[in-house]
Image 1 (tube, rainbow, N blue to C red):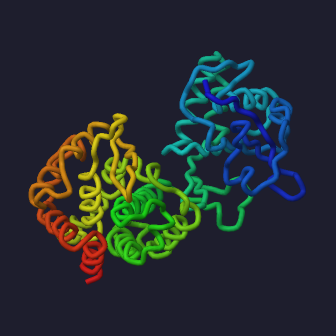
Image 2 (cartoon, rainbow, N blue to C red; image 1 turned 60 degrees about the horizontal axis):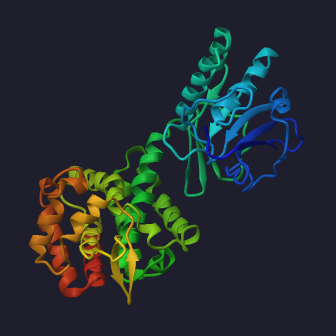
Length: 394
């Protein structure tokens, strides 16, 4: 069951009210790009009555409406899948057209997950086989994702959804866009968090106002990640600009510890694949992405177990909590920023529990990280960062 009770609202898709979408979400939320952020919703509606209106052709699940299968009650469904099946069964019995269903849950392949959950509900409720056939053949669950304030919808044809300026983008495959989002936007977050705190910045906004850090971030995005994004590489410069604008405008107030949560895992998911792709295509290492790794190592090598049992970092006459997996934090707490750079690089890179592999196996990486750690120890984080950005620009 959903932890929050879901409710339903109606949203006109045309000015003359000849076409509607239903939006399902939590009572406090209803957050979709077509929901309360930019459209006027008709709330407190009777979902059963609206389900059989011919002019309703689309169902949107907001970001809080999970798409994972769960047991539900047909008489009073509390999951997105359950509510959708109940309403669609009413339409089916009246020979009305099916719907386009657009979940906004922040998970990959959310359309496929919703379709599977709906089938599971229909089977659980022992609904007729011809309804199951209609459910699959006459309804479309399209995967969606949000990306720098845009809503991407995976579809091969037009949908009954009003386009709102540039905020809605139809794509044939979400996978390349999800990868770009992960490597560029997700990777930018890792760089800002690790290098930013090393330079004394505890918020995204403060880090983005640091010209040295912006230079590092810009070179990483434009020179070391975007050109290796396959079919989307031509859009790399424009997307990099969107990423920086999004970080400045939408994320400026975000700060530690939340902005640095699970930093090691995020590096593995976002930047390590980008680093490996660059090395594969160029037969050399990307200077800025290597610096992001070195900065993370230098930052985490300062972790200590605090008096309350929580791992912390010292910063400007106070301690900052670190939110990450405890085995990762425990491993770094045994290191020190003052260790010889060769020893620190070896200890950090060889830890398979942290990275899922021995990063020393990447040709030249241990030597590069050692040099960058030495630069940070001797010259300071900002000077070492500019050195790395300069090498990337060459």
